[in-house]
Length: 165
Ligand code: SF4
Image (tube, rainbow, N blue to C red; front, side, top):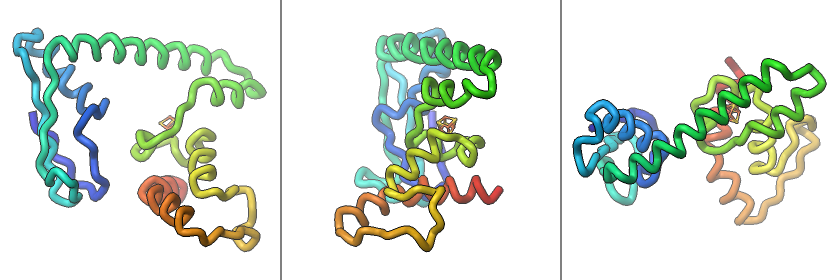
């Protein structure tokens, strides 16, 4: 299968859970009848060391193993949803602490502008606190800090886009 991505953010093709899920869907659709399943990522707008077109293969037995992990993830999500429905207002921070895990995957999430885990991660990565007034912020000018913050630029940009609606 081919996954065309028109965006500017580089998508890693190796062990990418989204791509694994696509392959799993294809394997289920075909009754795991092939030994090997391949996904090819096409990203004309994002440069990658291995080129703008690159593939990742998974054997049927690897996909079956991934299916178990994936199913466990779905069950965790269902449990989180049930807890969320039951959670009282004062318990919602504890719920967020228990269930929300922010990361690269947040970039396309509709909840990122209000998600406490996402906001905390952005603050941690940028070493700023969004509760502060911008004029109070003091940025360190060390080279490693700049490099670290710039690495997070696409995620921060996505968060700002989401927050501005
Ligand atoms: S923004 Fe929050 S809810 Fe959305 S994927 Fe990230 S952690 Fe999960």
